[in-house]
Image (cartoon, rainbow, N blue to C red; front, top):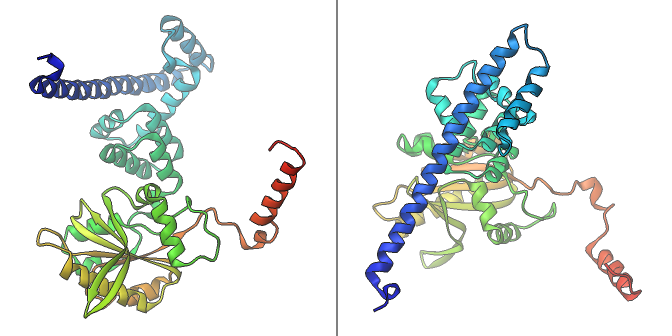
Length: 347
């Protein structure tokens, strides 16, 4: 028997490959940690040296020249990067604790730069450092969350979790929701139906899950339940792996009305009775509305027995109303293209 056909060999080589990949990852993290530790001390040295009267503005230029002559293949010694290293040290050093320094060293340098330059405060920056560590965000995902102001939105939904869920699940559930939700990946017009919104979100499920946050698993749309010999359909059903519970999301393309909460409360009761198991925590509801009055939302939840959060959604790139009539319609664009093609013009 050839070695490649041996099942024992295949199992062993698969395990060996997986082990080596983990070793590569650990080595990369360790190299990154050592490099950023070097950057940290370098940043402190640069500030200390420049604070002395003997070295002026030409110091960084000379330092860049000397280091790049010695290490020509290292990109981290450009003047711009040395300025960023100095800025990074200055940003964190005034109040930083020793354990936080090691946290900074565990995420890539590019992530550190993005967090430092886009954060308005150390508190906000620390939030993104910790989230990046916990969820392993790529730089693109990190920047997306920062540009959508996740830190300002997280935990801001109106809810009754404090009185309907036990601690600490109530706190975790509150932090899981945000307000508003930003659906800037959708191309819906100002007037759209709930079905159109639902279809657009499920068509862009990857971006939708990114906006919902870590832990959400998509279970389906228009999920059928039968109660009292009648059929009902829930807009969206998810399962949250960290909360260990089902999450029912109802979409309303209008302003919040108190009766919306009653309908969602009904759905949560049905899910708890028909779908939830003993291993699952109580089902949570999220009511996503085009707009909502905070006081009305709080009154609507006051005597509701099921855990529900209420938040707005925004279509960030929607065309302003005063410009809609100034833009060409799809039909006029198609006619123009057909005319150009008919005239032999290459488009």
